[in-house]
Amino acid sequence: MEAQSPMPPRPHPFVPFRLFCSTAVSKGMADDDPCKQFFVTLREAIGFDDGDGSGRNDRGCFVNDDKDGNSLGNRAFHWLVITSFLLDVEYLFEELPEIIKYQKVIVYYGSVEGNSMQAMRQWEQVLGNSGKTVEFIRLVPSDPPYSATNPLPFKLP
Image (spheres, rainbow, N blue to C red):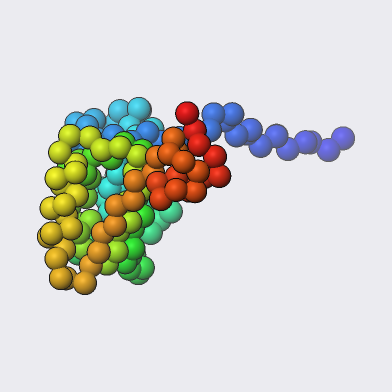
């Protein structure tokens, strides 16, 4: 009788996920903290920073070779689309100051927090005549269907 090879290990039924955390919280966690694997900063998610200091992201690509913050490996980013129901522009600038270097940024939001309206106007003013643009588009699903703020064919309560 032939010896059977052992069965390969079954993948763990747990599906990995990542929660966002601020850069300050991430830096405060010990490198050997087992919970750290479940958190990612906004900068890591976009590809500006790596999580382990290796200079590579999870796919093995080099992270942020260009100090302007516009590249990931050999690809240059020119556009950025942000979708957030509750937008905190001040937090966005704190976490990603490189954001003003993008050629075009489109921000879809539902409502704003704190001084975000003022920060939005300042962002537009900083760009001025640089040829770079930012566009803020407010979406309100409770507005009439197919309106400027509700592209849906129905109105949500």
